[in-house]
Length: 299
Image 1 (tube, helix red, strand yellow):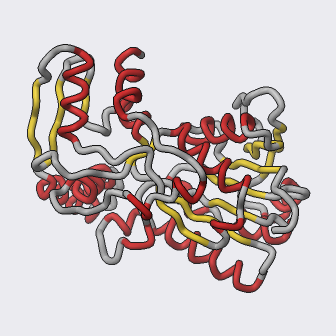
Image 2 (cartoon, helix red, strand yellow; image 1 turned 90 degrees about the vertical axis):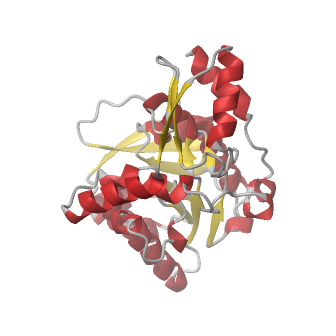
Image 3 (cartoon, rainbow, N blue to C red; image 1 turned 30 degrees about the horizontal axis):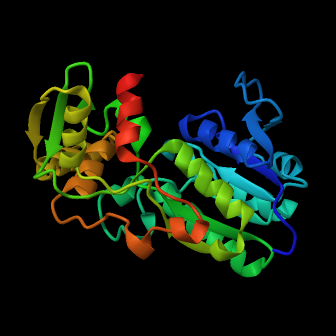
């Protein structure tokens, strides 16, 4: 990419991750345009331009993406299968870098894992982008695996902690480190990629704010609150079976059960550490785990 990326369009900018991404892009000095549906009442930070689009229309999206250097999709997992018109429009409009809604677990190494059934929208979208980039050398992509959304998970209970009742659910031994990222940190990762796009040209990267264990987190919240927490123990294999039973019925709430098995199981080996964590490549540092927990407890 000969000229710097300046103009950035964001899809899903009013969502949980999208809001953090928009804020960090604005803070980093990018000119941000939020694509929204007709009639949307979502609000954005000062200086963010709004363009209403028909997400099913390549023509509508192509018009909205004119003069945009990059496109970031932060739409939710349930909608990721509908990103193909976005990809086609990005190519047609001359967008130089796309970052699809790939955030979360690494979808490139799922093999025949049952959770991969639910994530086919992500997998197929990135495969499609990869094929498009082969025939369009000016069109490039970066895929980003971030692990669990840690701050969001604390607030919504998916980390296994309840500060109101001071209870913690520990899966298996609780000693398996896992990949996790705070939402603002993901925004900083995206801003860093766009500020220096060459190292991540047509590349899938993994990042993490930190790689904690469940027991490490429990020890910290007990330290910060000055109290012992009640601990409930759970078995990931049992959650896997619950997930499989739900999936067999077409119930995609199976995802949370399958996810617990994948990341918390003893020996999962999915922590992102050392050279596998692309923060050094991007010139970034991780977040402070204790500080993140302290912020959550104070909210």
